Length: 129
Image 1 (cartoon, rainbow, N blue to C red):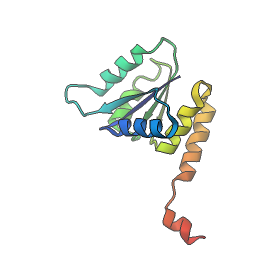
Image 2: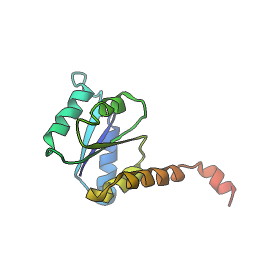
Image 3: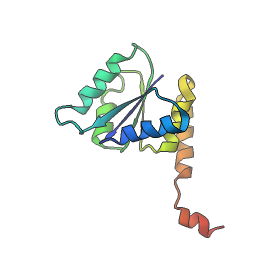
């Protein structure tokens, strides 16, 4: 399983840095969209995917549902064996990359559900204590 984080700006590098700090994992690829004017996101993603072994599964994580980066990746579904998860946060990314080659559709959905439950307004949580 290969892991790609593709985001607007350098957010992907930030996720990679945090994952390396917290877990020591350093096998995550990043695509930092729109930081170099001459690079097209779809072309950069496709070059990266082509560099992987044929048939190797890829988990691509993007920042915004409906955003241009997610649209670029979604256009590659079917052409490459990839899972696309969008609307990410650090907890979700950590959980997914730590599952490794055993990652399944069901595990992805469970991880997304757990991430949703962890997004809370702390003020409201503290008020109920």
